[in-house]
Image 1 (cartoon, rainbow, N blue to C red):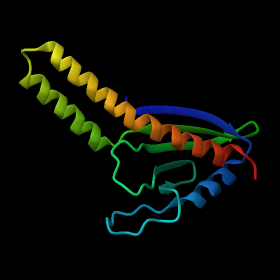
Image 2: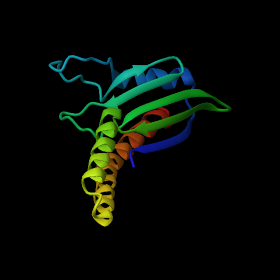
Image 3: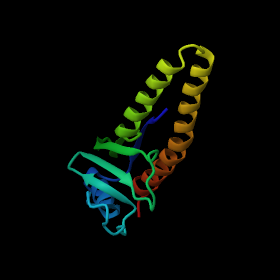
Image 4: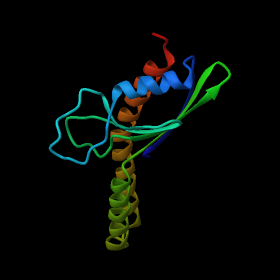
Length: 145
């Protein structure tokens, strides 16, 4: 539903891959009035790991949180990426589904349809954003400049 795992290799050394990520990732902020950064993503890039989220002009609960690890490979780097829906959204979704199950326990079919609808809506919102971020990361980290 709101989860995607991607692995790929890069000809770049891990240090160079991290440097490229640093170029496109703005520092995280909790200031809701902060100006939109020039970078495409916001988050943290560490020595071996990163956690980023695409900068959008709107609030989007379906935009994935992207956690990744860059490690040494035979020829370059191994990049392991995990994308998930924002945890608060998942908690709200599960609570809503539990409330629906309790309130509509008389009609199991309607409850199942509502649950399926929630899963479909989440997938339709999450997957395009996850594919967009995967494409961006691959283009950034796979191609030598």
